[in-house]
Image (cartoon, rainbow, N blue to C red; front, side):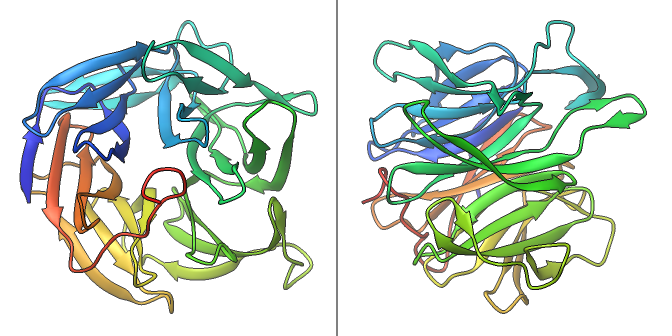
Amino acid sequence: MREICRGLRFPEGPVAMPDGSVILVEIERQTLTRVSPDGEIEVIAHVGGGPNGAALGPDGRMYICNNGGFEWIQSGPFLRPGEQLSKDYVGGSIQAVDLSSGKVETIYSACEGESLKGPNDIVFDKHGGFYFTDLGKRRGRLIDRGSVFYAKTDGSYIRELIHPFDTPNGIGLSADEATLYVAETNAARLWSFEIEAPGQLGKSPNLYWPGKLLHKFSGYERLDSLALDAEGNVVVATLISGCVTAITPEGKVKAVVPTPEFDLMVTNVCFGGSDLKTAFITSSGLGRLYSMDWHCAGLPLNFLNT
C-alpha cells in the first residue's frame, strides 16, 4: 500500500477520476478537494456543513451527501467526530458541485416535509437516479434513526425507501443493478436488498424488514463506506480494525487489508486507474490517502468509468 498524501482534514468519499487525480471531501475542512497523483492538494469548492459521500453525476457535476457538520476532537495525531452537532448545523442536504467553477447548488434538504439529518453515502444507477443513505446525527445521548432514499438529480423526485434503519452508511449497486448493498455502521452488518425497478425495492421477505443479511462481523467493529469489484465482492471500510474487508457475494470474508499505520478511522475505498485495478483508501483519522493494487478490477461506476 502506497501513501499518496497526508495532511487532509478527515477525508472521505474518494472518486478516482480519469485524469489520475482523486476527488474527495474533507469533512472537517468543509471542502471538495482534488488530490493529484503526486499528492498535491487543491480545493475545488468550500461546501460548508459536513461533506461526506460523493459521486459523479450524469451532468458531470459531483454530487455530495452533506451531513451538516460535527464538532471535532483532536487526540494526538488522530482527528475524529465528536458526539455533538456543529454550532452552525442547520440540517443535512444533497449538493451538486460544478468541478470547473466550484459553484455549489443544494438539490435536496428534505423529503416529504421531513428534513434530512445526516446524508452519508451515494451511488448512481444507469438511469441517472441515485440512492443515498442518511445515517442521522448524534446529540450526546440521542441519535436519529436513519433512512435510505432514492432521488433524481433535477430536484423533482425524492423518495424514502427504508425507515427506520439504524446507522446506514456505505451504499453500492451490483453490476446488474438488481441488488442494493448497504453497510450498517454500529451493528457491523452488511445488507443486500432486491431492486425491482429504479428506486423501487422488492417485496419484504418477512413482515418487518426488506433486506437480507449478507454478512455480520463478529468482533468489535463498525462499518463505513463500500465499493464493489468486478468479481462481485463488496469491499467495505472497517472502522476500529483499521482496514478494508472484502466480502464475497455469498457473504464470506475473502480478504482483510490493513493500512500501513493503524487508524481507527479507515472510512472509504474506491477503484481507479486505467484498468480499475487500483484501490484508493482514506485513512481519515490520520488524514491520509493511500493506494494499492487490487487482485481484480473494480466495478465500473456509472458516468465515471463507462
